[in-house]
Image 1 (spheres, one colour):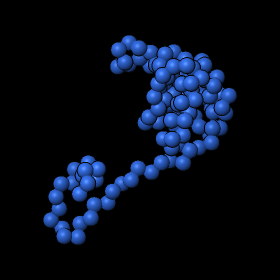
Image 2 (cartoon, helix red, strand yellow):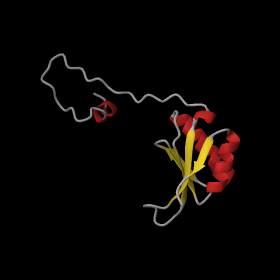
Image 3 (cartoon, helix red, strand yellow):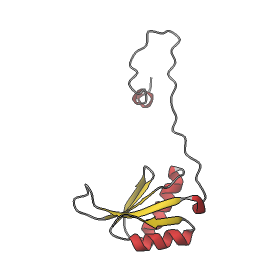
Image 4 (cartoon, one colour):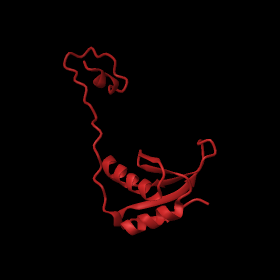
Length: 115
């Protein structure tokens, strides 16, 4: 058995059933909604980041590739680093107003949330 498959067994170690065949749950990418159907929230976050501020964009529904493309666009327009994973986009620094303006220009429904 390959190592990759072994890590995905979710706690199944051994079965006495001769006909047992583990069913792998493949992560299916969600279909990306149109920008006008997305409901994104933009907030400032500094929890568990050593006091550093990041702009956090949440609420994206779609595939990881589309999320990463949107994150790359926002990072390049703001001229900073960041990451896009788990349905969230992190932009280093306080760029809430600029990110909201860019997302509205792209056609997304956006709201600023948090203080």
